[in-house]
Amino acid sequence: MITIKEISSKKDLKTFVKFPFRLYKNSKSWVPPIIAEEVRTLNKDENPVFKDAEARYFLAYKNNEIVGRVAAIINWLEVNGQSEKKMRFGWFDTIDDVEVTKLLLEKVHAIGKENNLLYVEGPVGFSNLDKVGILTEGFDELGSMITWHNHAYYAEHFKALGYEVGKAYSENVMEFKNILQEYFTRVQNMVKKRYQLRALNFSNNKDIMSYADEMFDVFSKSHSVLSSFVEINQEQRDYFKKKFIGFLNPEYVKFVLDKDDKLVGFGIVTPSYAEALRKMNGKLFPFGIYHLLKAKKKAKTVTFYLIGVLPEYQNKGVTAIIFEEFWQTFNKKGIELCVRGPELDDNEAIQKLWKNFKPVTHKRRCTFKKTIA
Image (tube, rainbow, N blue to C red):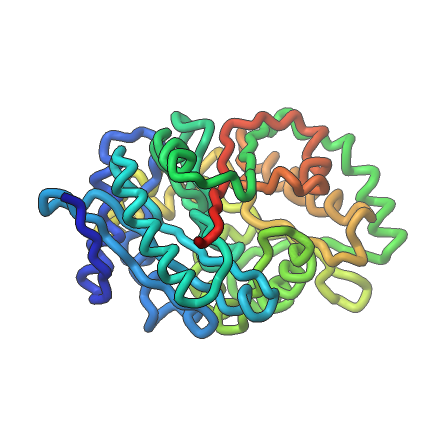
């Protein structure tokens, strides 16, 4: 018999976070999260997203053993501000038993119905800065700190329960040797001169912090046209600044400023922390910090995390300036592989951006959705 229990205590929340460690213990592709950070993300008292959102967490039990989990999420900025009557779900994991999936998602649907929402979609997080989708291709490829991993049967469960694909994403890799300067060096010189722009590089994280709010403004304006966009409140911005900027290698943060020193575009890349996180197995201490610092300094693979350009500067070659700066840095540091995070398949602009660099799609993922009956 399968039973579903709602959890609320910090102890139970830690149990919720740790379930995938058992589910994927034999996987060579799964990248474990840092347990303490994951608990903080889901803790209503610590994550400011809960100013505009709410979440309830459920665990599935079978023979007194945890066999599944799900977070039922409502982002009220999305529901009220964008009139998108969506019930979200995320942090979804299950054994290969479609009945477990069915019962967990019934809880999500019930909450959506209580709140007069029209459909359920997931797996998604609270906003665009969270992880998204389930893998449908590339199960043997190493994951990353910015994506969820899952077994191949997840998609079959959703289809069997009448869900349809919501949004489709692809993940691509590019060998650095294929990123040729000829595609952007000449262009970026022309763009700088024509629009009076300049590149800004960093040597420490403190200097990045002074531009962080402006960066979030550019991010919001550049991504607002995407079908998955949800606004990020000021408290969330402050939270993400504290949570992520310390992870950044300042050399991998590139800004473009106009003649008035206003930020018009940016790119953020991180060293690949995947192998370090696998060695840490969710624990920051006593040796986790060492593995992270080693990856930060020596990783030969990088992950493209965020890129944004103000709408009025899009299609004007600003990204050529960003690429030129990244190329110079990667060349000095001996970077071998560039990995891109999930990108919407219907985002034609981003696909065109990379087309000359011989990208190879190594993973695909998607969300699934269903009308609330």
